[in-house]
Amino acid sequence: MSNIVVIADARQGKVKKPALEAVGAALELAGKAGSEVVALVVGADLAAAKDELAKSGAKRVVAVDDAVFAQYSSDGYAKAIVEQLAALSPAAVLMPHSAMGRDLLPRVAALLDAPLVSDCTALHFEGGRFGATKPVYAGKAYKKFFATKSPFLATLRPNNWEVGAGGSAEVADAQTSVGSADLKAIVKELVASASDRVPLQEAKVVVSGGRGLKGPEHFHLVEELAAAFGAGVAAVGASRAVVDAGWRPHREQVGQTGKVVSPTLYIAIGISGAIQHLAGMRTARFIVAINKDPNAPIFKVADYGIVGDAFEVLPQLTEAIKAAVAG
Amino acid sequence: MDIVVCVKRVVKTDSKIKVGADGRSIDPAGVEFVLNPYDEFALEEGLATRERLGAGTVTVVTLGDAAAEKELRTALAMGADKAVLLDAGDRQLDAHATASAVAAWLRSVPHDVVFCGKQAVDGDDSQFPGRLAALLGIPSVTEVLKLELNGNTFRAERDIEGAREVVECPTPCVISAHKGLNEPRIPNLKGIMAAKKKPLDKIAAQLGEPASEVASLELPPARPEGRILDSVNALVDALRNEAKVL
Image (cartoon, rainbow over the protein chains, first blue to last red):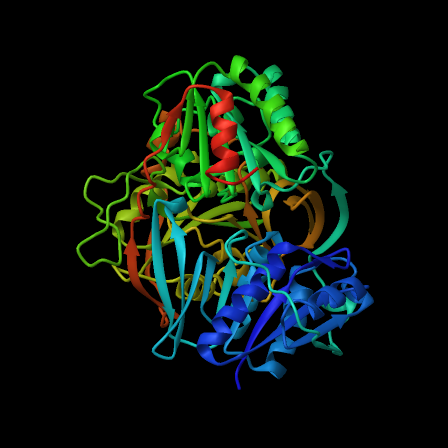
């Protein structure tokens, strides 16, 4: 029976939801391809990660748990992964399209001389071939690929699959030949963001502000609305216009040349909806637009719209969401 | 320092995408092409590095067809010293084949650092920098927001989920640029005139086989028509009872 390997990205010894979603996606694909799902994790002090992966629905967990991997290194991790994949000889390898997945899997793909489809929103197994569909042009179109070489590699967009759950997998610690001399690009420092808010691409709710806020000093209204959803639920986004104007940091930009998000709920405030912005959020499950201009293009993609002034609507909405969340 | 910057000719970001007759690629009619926006940050970093060191050569390279000469001239106008077009004709290539062809060329030229954009805004793959580095057997740092060179080591900052990583990376290496790394210069008239006389070599690309094939390109389904609501209460009610997201 062939293996589908999920590479779980562990940070500080823990795995996050996108890695468990990748296990969920692997289970679905394994059902079609008649494969077994193996979770592979590389890092140091992985006890918590191993526990979590053991309950993720994977058949087996392979952990390269070694102090040499205490700091992330793309070249060192890639080498360790390729070593393990040689033993597992997978038909397919999946990883979240997270910071680590984007950094690491292209290296792994090159070392394996293998195809990789990045940022996939669907996986396929048709006529004995693995494939995937991914957004291109920031979601203005979707491209479907099939692998013509093996193994097939894919990074998966977060928030697109149910997390894998259940079972109690056998956990095996694997040895590595990677030593500190193999690590060239090494993380020397990890500075936690000042904000304790959930990362934009993992957030269930994204509340974004645009030029309609009239100035950076009014963005507290957007932040307050995000906070109203409760801790760890909502992230703050921004349009390119306000990022380019220096009102908000670039990491908050939603759209082409920014981040592409697909939360359950996206709230666009004072954002007209330029084509580059729509490309970055149109896969949200529900879109709410608040804008003074009834002809703003954002209303064409919104499920619910309020034509009105952000300064009047926002405080009311924040209070109403607080009340709804409370109960 | 020998600095190489990899660039790509891409569809401008405000373009509307139409699917071509083959059902697998875009219809290029009426579409404007530009230098990939992230590559502008890569090129700016290459130029600024050369200027800070007061020495060095910036070579800009692309893989594509003859039309990409326009984007190479733009890069030369910004200040690159020379340009190389790895001619692939009209072959559709995946990241695997692209990285292989560029790596094959890079093995024949000196390179202390290779700058790339973090992704091209057409395929949105973000694979090329990492693949290239692995094929060359050198380290890489991707999605870089801040960069310093101390001797032969780069100190790079990049954002990950909820934190910022500070990475040290020795040369030779591949660095991929994120928006925010710098403010790309705009070519002036003098630069544009000078660019016409700068060397632009055309070399046949060493092309291998792609590792994937495109089955289809489709536009996303239209979103269902929405509703304008007249109050915040109506909105919260809809979010709770229809959308069930509260």
